[in-house]
Image 1: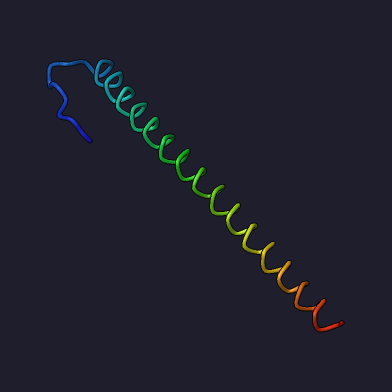
Image 2: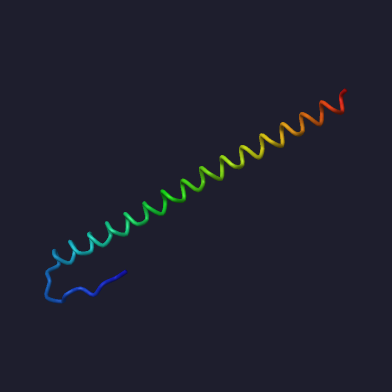
Length: 67
């Protein structure tokens, strides 16, 4: 991701270029984090559904045993 900087450019120009590169990297990282957050939400939802199913099944089995 690092690019060679023009030795003739000023420190200010180099700083501007570096800032632009860092902003691009930050935007890419935000995209990855957004995708990961969506995956976590889906996983949590699936886990909650599975837990609910197990609780319902356990309650049904308890109901059968108690009768």
